[in-house]
Image (cartoon, rainbow, N blue to C red; front, side, top):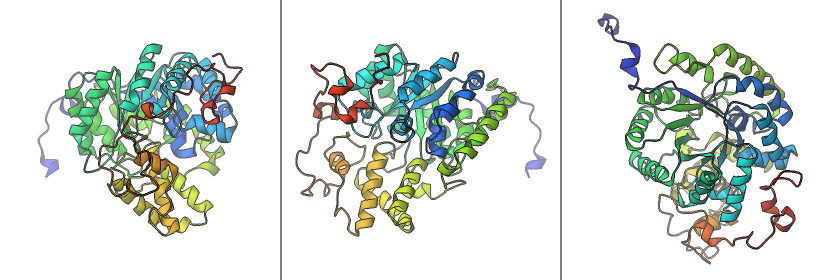
Length: 452
């Protein structure tokens, strides 16, 4: 029995932690992915600014404050200038590097843009206060990351490569190691594993981090969501395997479809070789502030609180699930959510098993919903589905069902080129002025009063 085991006088750290792993680093994600996962990204700048000075004192490795859905929500729902939001945050944060998430060739939108717009957007992001840009592609077609990565390097800022974790017959540790090596060869300085749906298993976390640490020399960070209740166990296994850092939120904005709580992990590594040195009392004060914010924005809070083990089957990230709920409620068809979840898994398989990150999650989710609501699969095909099947978004790792591109509505203009080649260079020989650009492009420019 376990209680009869002889005591072994060996230091805890030498048993559980990789040698020379060093203090565990923490990225704060409350301002971006934290509130995106829990509060539908509805926190206004006036409620963000008061807590920033205190957060700057924590000693985070970085604070993720921009990119992802924050840009879109500022424009569409909050009527805020996203560029002014960034500059306002930068004016308060003096010590901690500011980070953003960039969807490769898709920038912060839902379709690929031309190379020159990507280059200009990256340059403006750097000039307006961003220090670290994590670049990823939802399909893991790294051709879609080349321009953005080069642009970040040119700007003098740090570039990270986002590795989208998912489960499928086409995804395994060898595939992830290959992607990591490609990122390293492209010049990224940090590899960031994104487990956006909370699918990673503790055993796999240990094996994955071990394999990646053996394959690349750059630091490795891990972000998991708590949807399936596995994230904290995965973090602990990753910490033992030598992961350099993790993404977390203070406890009052954690768990559910969100992230593991910062305070718990800080406490867990105290007194070990991986002790972060972060102050739990200070974190407690920050957590108290976000408790009030969670109450203030309660109307936007996701209903997916607690553990959803069903995510291991449908693999839908929390943010995507919230969007599906909202859409179906608007159609008066919320009772059909279980059908849509089953259809998402089928469509994803037919689409070549893309990881369900933006924009592939929106494409798969919209088509699955259409298939269920119309009562006939692919009776109606969204424009985004057509573009996806034409490879306008890039190539998935899996094989697209060969029957889908044969449908009359999608077979025209099938292209095998990378998305940047397929698109016209919209800014060529055009003065850089928002008034000269298509509406879809204007949101990615600083406002006229902004320094451009």
